[in-house]
Length: 347
Ligand code: SP5
Ligand code: ZN
Image (cartoon, rainbow, N blue to C red; front, top):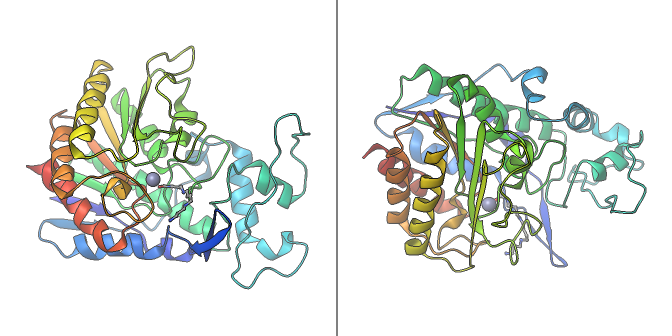
């Protein structure tokens, strides 16, 4: 039986636009992404849907995040009008525009607009009045998935998180991410022992790496498009191997733009071998479906059978495993891609 963890609260977060190279385009991280996967999987035989109704506590969130960041997110999102100096834009979202750069005065002041730039590293994580609730429930979906993994009743557990989480670090948000769902799940699974995270999103999981950089008990692996050419640009290089207390607990495999299924499968094996040397007791897989050849925003060439293969390779580790939804912007294809991954995992 597959457990699909889902919350409709994600629909409260629906930013209008993304600023990309001087143009505005529809925000790609849209509610239809998660709803399409939900509709595709929820009806299938052997799939049990679990919808959490009690949100994760503040204490659980600060196991992986800075208190100031969590307080800021909740406060600004739920009191939005109060903090903007003029009427809110009609679409209802605040977009960060000004960031404290190096050598600039970099101090946290009372201004909420200042805090918006302070806690944000890019322009891709706008905040609206439903953002906090959606992000909180997304984190709750991940944690509920981890609890289900601990219970051990299902043959696969898939946390259908939205908004995604892997670009959110200890004290920063960005890249459509607010709370790091996979990191929260890994934190819950520590009670089993060491946890390995293998991030298969197209983009480097910079937030997850930031959170566990100095943690010798969490392996943080990520396969992704070479940050020389691709977002998030400042991390995800092969020479990032962890902080001084956790050398080799971080492992990055940057891959060229245009990487196809063959080369990707090789990299998956390399990553799994590396993770296995860490002797983990549990596995968290941040799942980006944006590696798909037909993803509108990304540049890898994976096909359907590659997802089956990846799922199978992950299953061969033989560990309690949680899948956590991250990216994937081909809305029509998302459900089938997730299905293929699960098909391989259960084969
Ligand atoms: C979770 C996840 O996959 N986050 C990715 C965030 C990166 N978005 C950066 C977008 C950069 C500009 N997009 C241009 C799209 C042109 N079609
Ligand atoms: Zn991505």
